[in-house]
Length: 344
Image (cartoon, rainbow, N blue to C red; front, side, top):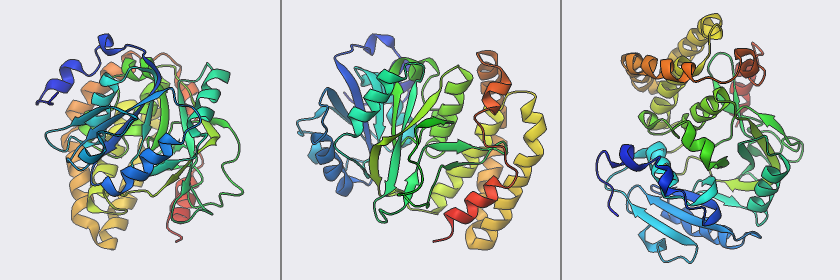
């Protein structure tokens, strides 16, 4: 099946696609990642649980050599790079499992990774999303993340990034949202909130999805036994102009769309302060044009984002203080995380 412009909007969330032929549908989005995909598929072949299908969404034609892999039920070559958000949404429509598992091509799961996610889901039916324990592939003594944290300023980060993997991220607990590099979602809930926001293209889309799931009454559990070894930013590069542009533009949109009243007004000064800090910091670092363009484009997109906000807030099923309960609220937490992230 060839993807045509506009076809995603028509079919992506059709419940008729839901056949439940497998317990789990693993979606891999390929872009400039062929050299990582072979090892990722090998790790999936080694999983102790095999009741799953693999769906490859190929954003640049680089993954065609893997279409005959025994695990791959669906291989979809896209006409162009649609981005992480759109490709996963399309994959979710093609999925037949009760659970959708998103896995980056450069994330290598340990053999009991999927079994531990499913065990956590069975033991904690009140949760709809589950986050893996990510270890830095190139520095295995360090955490790559223990799920995502969301701060009242609108900033977000991976819990425990750059901390010792032997000491941190060892406890199962509720977190704000999963990192989509290795995450599991109940498919029904993923579809209920319309999946990823495709205007985001890439970056911050998983935080935004996690926020909307929470507003809809869903919760996320971090599962430390579900371990993947993550290369990180293999397709776009760390600190690249691409990641800066999409990350900060989408950060602003996420805050405006999702932060419930009255907190959006209470925390707006903090959000503006955070944006100003990174405007000047990244300008000093030599990425001034890209960060200023990101903020300018975020402002230009606000009318559309405000329309989305109306729908999201109208459908909110929880009280605002329930959202605040799982946010990071320390005034100096963003600074601590910023220093931790940049210490190496």
